Every structure is written in C-alpha cells, then in structure tokens.
Length: 311
Image (cartoon, one colour):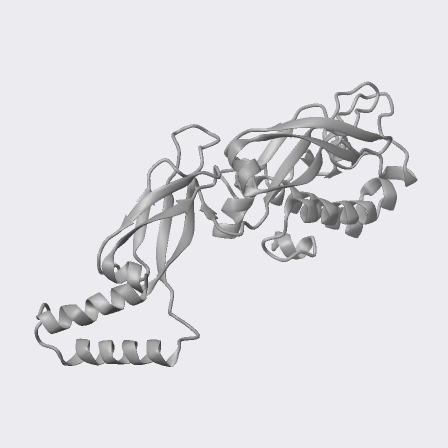
C-alpha cells in the first residue's frame, strides 16, 4: 500500500499538502457522507491510515526510509478505532475536527459545544544581516479571520535564515472559549552586499592590488558592526588566501560563543594601463621568467621600480 499514492501525493509532500489531501479524501469518502457504501468506507480507511503515518514526522520518516507502516504494532493494524464488523468513528471525530474544524454535513459541527484551540499562523519577516546578528524590535501587522492585528516582536540576536520564533496565543482565537493558536515568525535574511553567513561565521572577499600582494601591506577591512579592523598581508600573498578574525562573526542565538570573520584575498588585475605601464610589466614578467638569480642587484632594481610604480 503506497500511502502517498492513496492521498494523491508525491514523496516529499509537506505537512500542509498532506492535510489538504486527507481533507479532500475525507470530504468525499467519510461514512457520514456516503452512508453504507462499503467501497467508500474502504477508501476512507485507507486515507486515514495513510494520514496517520504521513502526518507524524517520526512515522513518516520511517515509512520514507523502509517503505512500511509496520512499526512494531504501534498502529494497531494501521487504523485505530477499527472493528471487525465495520468502521467505528469513536475517538476519530475529535482528531478530525481539531485539524479541519466543522467540515462534515455541509459545515455542521460534530460537537458545537466543545472548546477548540485556534489555528496557528505564520508570518515571514525579512531581516537584514545586521538586524539578525544584533537583534531588533519590530512592529508587525497581520490579519486573523476576524480582525487586523499589530504587535511588537523582539527578535533575539543571532537568529538565522529559516529560524522560527513562537509567540504563544497570538494566532487565531479559539472556538467556544478555547485557547488561541500561536503565531510563528519565520526569519528570511536579505542578501548582504559584502558578507555571506554560514552558521555563526561570516565570509567576505577582500580585494588587494598586485603590489600589496607582492610586497606585503597592512590593510583595513570592514566588520558587520561597521568598525574597521587591520590585517597584515604577508609578502608574496596569493589570491584566495584566507585570513580568520576571531570573534568578529555572529553571536549564537542558542549560546556557545561568537563566530569568526573569514576573509578571502582577491588580487585585482590592473586595467586600462598606459603604454609605459604595459612596457614596465612586460619587461618585469620577462625578467622573472629568465632570471635564475632571485636577488641579483639588477633584479632588485626592477622590483623597486615596480614597487614605486604602484605607490
């Protein structure tokens, strides 16, 4: 029995897609809607069994890996509340109503006096890398079924792309004085012009000139905190060399210290050279290829001339 096929889904379907697919099948085949139609009852049982497995993350993971729903008899044959003589809905209506509300009988609620928790809501919040790194208070506006809401949200320092912040009781209001649902703030990070984030570390490219790479230099680079720090470029530095600045990354939202800033040196190639500059570079390149003496006086004079040229 292929649970995804039963619900008309492909493997990897999201929880929302699984709920919607089951709701569609239940609306069509539930015994309350089909009477004594045994074929419909069988299809509903199969859909419920499929939903029992795929709606549970742990069971779904095992099913995806092993292709079976037999996890030591934990499902009671895969369908709780089933009797030998037919379909027993005892204990199922409450679960069904918790997920979908009053969908039976053209909108008629099964238990109109029961208290239900309100639905959870999700709000996507776009943050700059700086806002995510250092935390920020923001006012957000969203709508429930009945009203527009505006609340202040404190974003803790260190949140990352895809993180969810739970605000209890800020979702849809409950039914019959039931508790309100929760509001989940999902963090979406905007692309930064300089830095890329990987966990709590930051990465950036640092352009340097050919002369700085050849002769060494002390350069300043920006940090996410808008301050500048100095790093020493050794003589003969090659493009792609990494420099790590400890503690200049992002503080972990879950504790555990601060990440690093890792800079990759990128040597810039001179452009728009004059004829004199081209001649100087060509002669210097020829000298490097043909000279066997690394530190001859003549060689050093060419090197000194190149260094002065790039000042």
